[in-house]
Length: 371
Image 1 (spheres, rainbow, N blue to C red):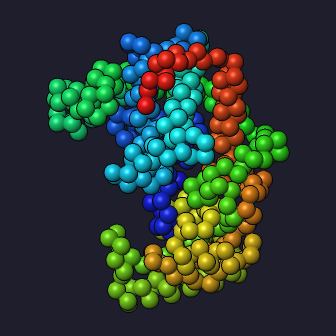
Image 2 (image 1 turned 30 degrees about the vertical axis):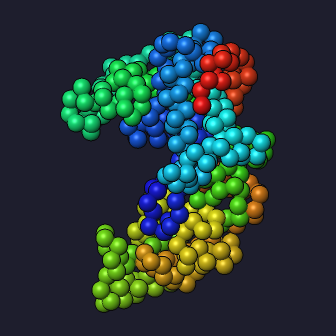
Image 3 (image 1 turned 45 degrees about the vertical axis):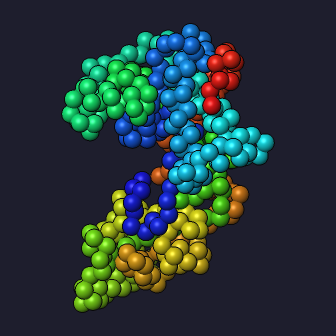
């Protein structure tokens, strides 16, 4: 799903992807250049899962990423960090929450590495080529030489360039295990329905534009843009011509033509290939668009709605009450759910079961020393 869709006026948080799974997080981390899981064992260790150790250096490296995410999520301004870390959230200090999250996430990674090795999953030539490309990009962005890249890596992340390469290798190996398991899990419409009926709360999960199981609407739309690539409104004459075209399409929609087909033919929003639909709560979209969508009943089609982006024709499919899961229809049809969501949920259930099976041995003295 495109994050810069024309009607989106909200700001999504990286943290909501945290528990989706290892790869979703890894992609975010790699995309930021250098964020990752450092599995190289040296010096004292913080914990042990099976034969896999979490070194102190590794743990501090990854903990720093979680701390940065917490500061981002809470909107902590520069200079206010110390106050934040000294103020309890409930009955805990934020650093203790961050350490627990880091340890839990590291446990997930180590278990996936263990399972990958048990199944003989290895890095292949294409994996090493991708790793080399990643390191080359980092070198180029840091100044063009391995010396300057190594210095930047140490300064920013506390690891050498070689260690950074090992981080990426472990991410790729963990991802390969997960991808193998996902390919082995088959999901039909009947499986989606069965999983939905057994796990309704999972279908309250945050999506791109719905948070905390808030009241939401599932709506499709056709966008006729009246702005250029710089966000500037077209001349009045052109805007009027666009409005007339939108009026003609509106007539076709209200006469009963297939709305999805009209979306695919006319809409200029990034959601058009998917049928132009969004599940969203309040405060996530352009105000005019939001007000129109929430005012409609399921099955109704709006008149033309003018937003800062252009003219919209909106059709509401369903409404979702606060604290309720999405409907089975949404679970089957909406792009953020469907077969892949259920596959990933089944995999996540498996991973949680493995976490219960694998005991973590914490080196308490080292763990407690980290702040």
